[in-house]
Image 1: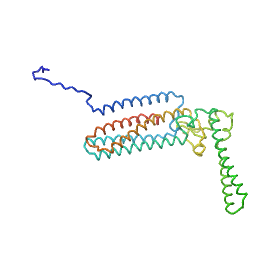
Image 2: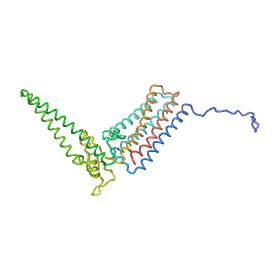
Image 3: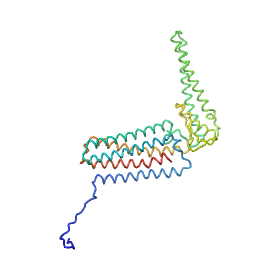
Image 4: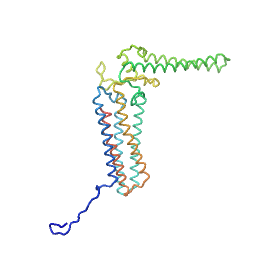
Length: 331
């Protein structure tokens, strides 16, 4: 091709591919599919959340905003450390790059540790994704009342069986010689029997007669549920106009009870919460595996591209949590 200005031939260069490394190109393609996946999850959650007639607030589901904010800060700091690792690798400072990768790994592990603590809090209160594992019921109906009665029947049967076993042991001891050691054993059995009897009486008094009433009204059953699992919202007010504070329920006072309770919309909340945070946690775990693999390599200038690609993935994980935190914890 001739230059019209008379400067001779012009050489054209053909670029056979995108002006980025293949690894980064494939990573962006992968992230595009992940973006569509999480966009679908978040979109479905928004439709369900704002289309539900009743949706439990964070306080009702033992979701602590401060813990979620702390986890957000942890992930943001981890994004900073992975950028510092890339900068060190580009400057051919392999030891410093490995140090920052290790710091990112620790911060990611801390995020998962906090999430495990949150999950444990939900599980201890009987909040699971759905029935039959969950102890939550949508309304105070005959199914809820039947579940409470069945749970109490199992508890009382267990106590009665223990007391019967104690009575049998006591009978065998009374049939033999009444030595000082035998008398001490008999006294211990009597003490254990009294503890069990008192416990059963305490349960019966705490739960009240509503649980055994087959004709109990929905209002009475709802009041029973509130005694089992208080669900006061921070916006509710009492008769004096003061904000209600969550009180200690029977399941908190007696963890062994594990009685069913009513939270309208609770099972749908648990399903969406565990689905979105669970998938996000799996992506965090995948990032931690990538960081572990990087720690066994020399992160000099030649591997700066690998550090950059892993960092891009980690920024995506961070960005997803930035969307999940306000949706799940603040609304």
